[in-house]
Image 1 (spheres, rainbow, N blue to C red):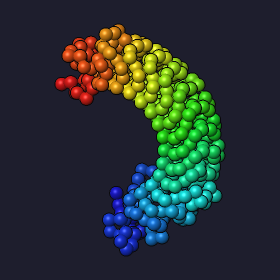
Image 2: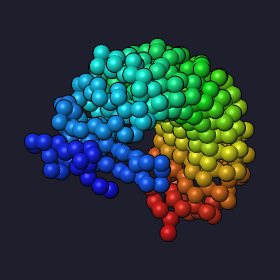
Image 3: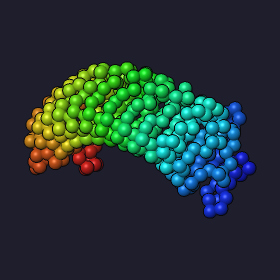
Image 4: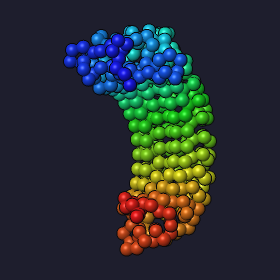
Length: 344
């Protein structure tokens, strides 16, 4: 790691000294790779920062920037740009959509600003990562212009009420829409390469995954589900998070042969059932339900008896029985953790 003196200049005044721009050079590539890191310098603008034309990555996280410096639009090698945690409003982002020199951008992070709509990112034909989480966006309108090559899309912690303009993202692998106002799971059927779907803290009442056969992680925590039916075709699923809902019955899980982690804590379950076939299950979270006893647990988890390493059943009636821990240890010889207790 070298300083940026003479190449990425120094900041003057109060911002100098420790607040010197950082540069990373990797000689194994053709020519130097320059990385400008101005994280947490509380800058209001970049007027005192030298921006060399060879930059490939710029990280401006945690500043006080309210505009995009036009010199960034003159960086032909720029691949990653982060304006995370700044003060950018919609109009301030508009110039990005016309800067053809940086059309090769692959990662654009505008997380935690003051945006109310999806920015126009259509010029970035090879965009792979797009993050507009933690803003005030009310609609996904505008996503139709985003490159179909996109692999990761983050729009969590906004005010989005409808899943739309997602159909062309055939290469998408990660979709994060947690903490919005979504009520219906829809327009996902064409996302055939999706591997992770995060929809926690919404208002969703039913599971509708349209047979996403490659998906490995699903989070629907803190929604309004009363049933877990609808997951049957997600046969590649490895991690399933359904805590803090109103689910009354364990169902539709028997086909999920690859499931390793199942979290159905804080629901309304009274019985552990329909998971006998889950032979790879390692972590099972059932705490804060209404399970009365451990009767039938061994049968219900017969398939994962030799695999299970963690089980949570605390704050169920069954956890109050005198032989609670000893019974579980006897049933599951590989257990390493019961609730918050690590087994020596």
